[in-house]
Structure formats: structure tokens, C-alpha cells
Length: 330
Image (cartoon, rainbow, N blue to C red; front, side, top):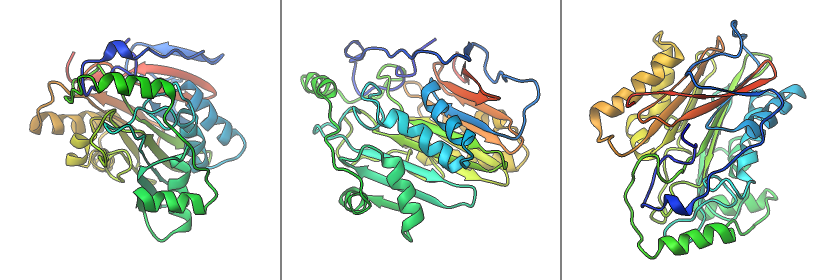
């Protein structure tokens, strides 16, 4: 199985990036076949599903549900885990910096009522997803960016911190020797975490958070904080999130497209496949990766990517498994 980190690149530096390993949960299993359910009959909830191998994040989300929390509480709690993990070098603290050496973060969150909040180009804050939720709940806006997002976070009691770890800084300085800037699929091991949850009431919420492409141009923002691109939830239908090269997802409003296809009658799997094929038909996809993940109100789920190597984590009935998604290229 290709490690979740081996996904995109801005240069040929795979040797600089160590692979990650997670200690499995007691009920954690790995499935090689895509779209394999833990149970034969899917209940509407509770369910937690996230991009990549994220058993710890799913466990935190499930714990929130077990305490009577909403799907919104669950997705926030879940994605905060990689945000605070310095070994997760594509999300939050320890994330790889932009080409100028600054760690900048993007995140968004969406609830079952259609409310949404997002932050982009945010620096110095450990948990951008919680700032995004505060934007949603405490301002009349959907998105705050840059200095404005930082000032708002500080006004809400968030602590200003240095997010550039010694490990990430060392890799960045090594990258500066060549400063190659070309996406190549499944090399950089970069990604976001997108998470969807259904609570005991059958309500759906979603969250997405990332430190973005390593060594990106300063100010670059991808699809992750964009409602309708990196994440979209319609509580009547379902939810979807995206992963990979954000520019391609933004050009097709990828997550919104997946949900709308489900509205038209596609299963989550069919919707993810069709959304990926929209990109394949219109974009040069040979050296890049995009993946979609979706769940509907019935608790059915689907995942699909352009390149092999994308996987997802499902927690249902207190059991967690990672499954390799189907892909357009083999």
C-alpha cells in the first residue's frame, strides 16, 4: 500500500521525508478492496469517515459522538488530532512551509444547517479548524484570511505559536538547494485531512484542514478551505470532501459536484468516480492526483482517485478500518 504521504510533489525529494506509522486501535483492520463495509447493513449513523490513514483522528471524532456530541463536534475534534501532530507534516503544527519558510494554514467546516466557516493563509495558530468554526458561529462571514484571520483568532483567545518545527525547517533548507517546483503524483506524500460524520440524529457535518502544498508560492490557497471545492455538506443528501492538487478541484467545484450527483441519484461511489472523470476529461492528469470521498444520508459511502495510492478511514459500529480506494489509473 502506498503511504498516504506519497501523494504530490513540488520537487523530487521523497528521500527526505520519512514514512509514518500508526499504532492500530484494538479494533483496527486494513482492507485491500475499495468500498468494503465493516457491516453488511449500513445504519444512518453514527459514522466517521476521513481521507487517508487516520485511526487516531477517527477515534477522537467517535469519542465526541459517544459523549452525545453532534457531527459538527465530531469532525472538529477529529481533525484537531493531525493539526497538533508535529509528525504529520501536511497539517497544522509541523506542516511544511511555503517557499519563504512560513507555515500557512487553511481550513473549513460545515454543519447540517448549511452554515460554514473558513480561514485561509492563517499563520501561528495550532488549530485553524477551531478558528473556522468560530468564524461560522461568531461572525456574519464565511471566510477570513491572513492577518485578519490571525487577529480574529487572537481576539477569541487562541494562542500565537511558532508552527515551524526543526524537522520541517531542515527539510525546507534542503529543498532550497534546488528549489524545484513541479507537481508529480505520489512523491511528496502531501495531503490534507477531510472528515465527514453522521451523528445519532442522522445529521451530517464535515471538516477539512491542511498546511497546503509544501514550498508553495507565498499566499497560495488550495481547495481545502473553499466551500464547494474541498468540502461540501447538504444534510438532505450527503457530504463530500476532496484531496490532492487543489487547483484541479477548485476548477470543477469538486465536492459540490459530488453532492449534486448524489442528489441526482448516483451512489456515493458513482458520484466520486464521475467527479474524478470530469477532471480527467479536461485537465492534464498524468502527473497529479485528486481523490474524492463521500457519504450519503443512508450511510453509504464511496471513494475514488485519479492515481492509485489514495485510501480512507471508516469508523462504524465502534470498528475502524482503512481501505484503498479505487482509481482511474491502475
